[in-house]
Image (cartoon, rainbow, N blue to C red; front, side):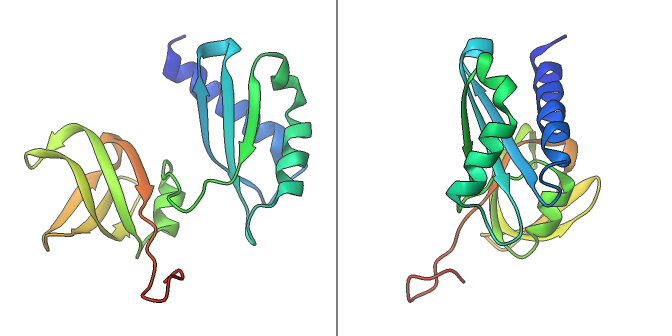
Amino acid sequence: MDESDQHRQLVATIEATLAGQFPELEVVDVDVHGGRSGRLTVYIDRPGGVDLALCEAVTRALDDLRDRYALEVSSPGLDRPLRTAAQFARAVGARVYIKTGTRLAGRAVFRGRLTGSGADVVTLSLDEGAAVDIPFHTIAKAHVIFEFDDNGGHQ
């Protein structure tokens, strides 16, 4: 089993473990640093946000993983990662950063307003004004670009 299969299996295990206890919870992302004896960071979200009590409860629910990893549970933060079609669909209208694994139209890094998201493609209105369709399977990394309004608050 290669590294990406192991990662998918780990994510599936985490999601299955949490689904019964926290049905409203979304596992946004899972990062492993340093292999099986390294650090595991689980980024979670739910309607209404994430607080310390939820992070503690999720940590307790994932106690079996603490035998293999230094476990951290956290909110995804303001520049939340985008990895699933559902996450992209919820982010329509937001500014996003997308890095592709292969070059598209001569480039691999895109920044702009997410104007559409389907099962196979996301559409960006680029900062320079053009629009681009990015096949979902080419996306290597993506996240929301948090924007402040003129008063320092969230738009």
